[in-house]
Image 1 (spheres, rainbow, N blue to C red):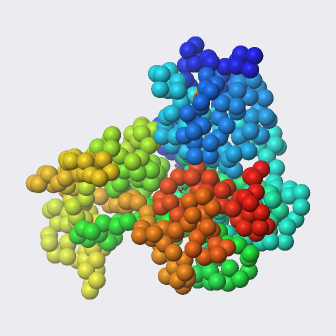
Image 2 (image 1 turned 120 degrees about the vertical axis):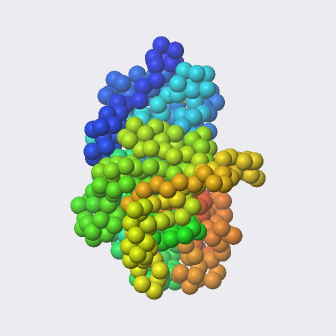
Image 3 (image 1 turned 60 degrees about the vertical axis):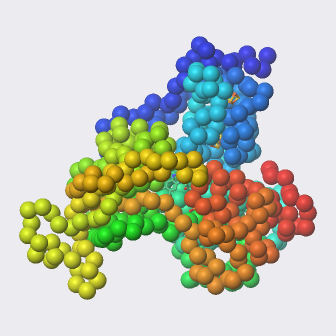
Length: 498
Ligand code: FAD
Ligand code: SF4
Ligand code: SF4
């Protein structure tokens, strides 16, 4: 019977792969979980109850066939499990590592709902494809027929790369342009190695290249080549440029020295881990070593910053967030990891102003810290922290933070990292293309299913359409857009994905 090895959730408790001790892992940028051993992966997969209506699958943006690959893993049929898993997901081992499973597949697993603890879907997905890499089952695209039509993809993040992979497997000529020197987008330069080790991303880039995808790196579209020139070179274009404009603070001395943007801080740290020379890190500006660090924000980017600062050897790391723990957007799993590693969360708190004056130092000295005519504070010394309480729910149902008058205090700080979220850059203006329509939020307007924009033959996916979102959604968009582009180029209805 197919389910013989399954339904073990009553007798077998839920187990994650072993987490390295906080003292050990906060010394390096390696992933924090050890590998599942074969037997452990099979045992954990066998907990699945093989639901007829699998909520895990309906809450996975890629609708991964989770019950089937769990059963195959439990039965030791790993190569088949890999084939099923990769049929719906371009980067299963990446999603297994960094999807917020507690909000997606695992959070909706029925045995989690019945109090037995979810099947550890993400860890098993990672295990299956890591094993596939080890055993040589992951192979580059080998199209049965080359096609003459070419597609230019702007942006080598997960959205652009998922589309590149699907199109190339169907024989299209694919060129991916990116302004960075390495492909991967935020997988490479945003997300730190302790969540996603970089060789996992680099081997994917190499696989795409081996399959015939051309990469044009260090190429900033709009500067090094115009958008129109790219349209002229290719039969279809996909925009997958992500969102990089940092939301800012409107407070006194918001631009003080020692106050940096999360994306600059994380990119520098990732580059250092690659062994690159990073002058802003070497001169200390983007290095937390020996500093009292305050990170502002409560999302996943903030969590990545606090944990990076710990690894860089910060003196102390505090995270200011204006709501409480229950109302923060970041994953609870990440908050727990951060706390274990020594981060202090200061809930219901927001920055009121940045101050350069250190108590006990004469005002003249404080004024000397201000750069000439710009009036910019040369170096932050303290954050004035305002205390908040939660008021009535807003239109989205979330309680709005309200200021508690007179409860301010000053918190010493040498480095402040702003992790307040990202917005889209104004692409039509930057690229000089009037016909490219955007929404009122500045994201590109694209058809929800076909991903076609207002310009013929131009498609768009990922964060530049959705606003800051998740890797798994960018992958889904990229795969769907590839089908749609293939249909557009061949005049056929949408081509079924492999
Ligand atoms: P991106 O990954 O942003 O890639 C866009 C690419 O386009 C970049 O390489 C950029 O260089 C390139 N580009 C932009 N403009 C140009 C131009 N003019 N010319 C040439 N190239 C250009 N999601 C999760 O699911 N799990 C997580 O744990 C997670 N952690 C995150 C941590 C951080 C710090 C951040 C910032 C985001 C995180 N996310 C996470 C979100 C996730 O990374 C994004 O949703 C996802 O990467 C979006 O994919 P994308 O392909 O749309 O864009
Ligand atoms: Fe879960 Fe993400 Fe994998 Fe889907 S892709 S099964 S949401 S970990
Ligand atoms: Fe298995 Fe949970 Fe999915 Fe049901 S919801 S099929 S128990 S993983």
